[in-house]
Length: 187
Length: 180
Image 1 (spheres, rainbow over the protein chains, first blue to last red):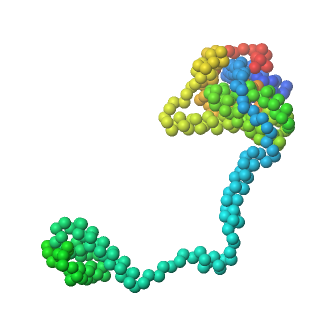
Image 2 (cartoon, rainbow over the protein chains, first blue to last red):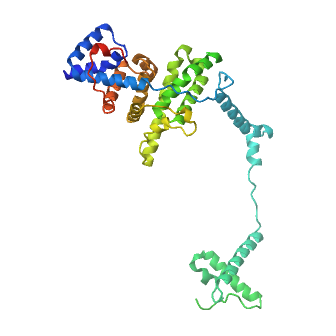
Image 3 (cartoon, rainbow over the protein chains, first blue to last red):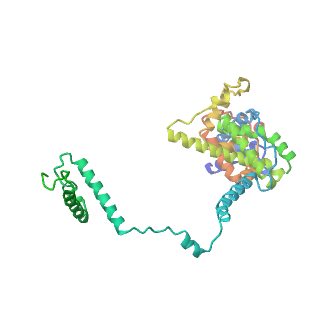
């Protein structure tokens, strides 16, 4: 009986909307005559139909209808194509505006030129760097009791330490002013 | 399809589709957006749509849009920890235009609120069948579903609305047939 009820309950929607054939209607009505549960289910079906069916149709607010019929390629495709064309032009145009050169010529002409420094220039640059380090050391070490090497300690590469020591000793020989960085002193 | 046919479709289906979206989503702004979007899609694709089938096509579009919108809103509410808004009040009270407010009786209000407990898709199918009076085979054609599947869906929805549908009238079968 339960299985039968499920079968007939599934037909109630169509039954209530006149969607069943004559044979199916007869069979269903025979069942309904004998089944109170299915009759109750039919009553709910009809109530549902009555309540939702009587809901009012609400007027839609004015919509913004398109005024011009789009072409076969819609505005979207047209717009996208336009953007693509602009991008392509931006990529290609610089090449079109400049004189095209063979690849080999470009390889040499656009290469970043190398700068050749003279030995004297390198020495001077090194001196300048070291002098900056000394000045920095003087600023850092107010007591001026320590050498640059002592201030920066082992953080300095060995070559730099050697150069600084040489600089310190050279300065002390060439100037009469007190060596700002005494060679000895407290650590 | 030419522009005249499009305009005719707009006039003949607009209110019906708007009402469907309104009862499905219970939000006038969402309903308006959906109908606008549906007709925009029709505008973009009308070269490919048979005018005789445009009504079903539009219904399918509105159904899908309603389902998507409802799912998105539910996901947002879940994320924010908000209860699902049984916003029947939004249908029955309009602060902007009191004259436009819907006047629904208590049973209709209760039923619409109960429909919100159904899945968005089932709710839309129920509104299609009972409010728009679409036959099951028409709904099946529009949504690409079988009549059997729709029968099961509606049957289950009716079961879950049982507490709202309290009519237990046991009337003679002959008197009840075809009154729906």
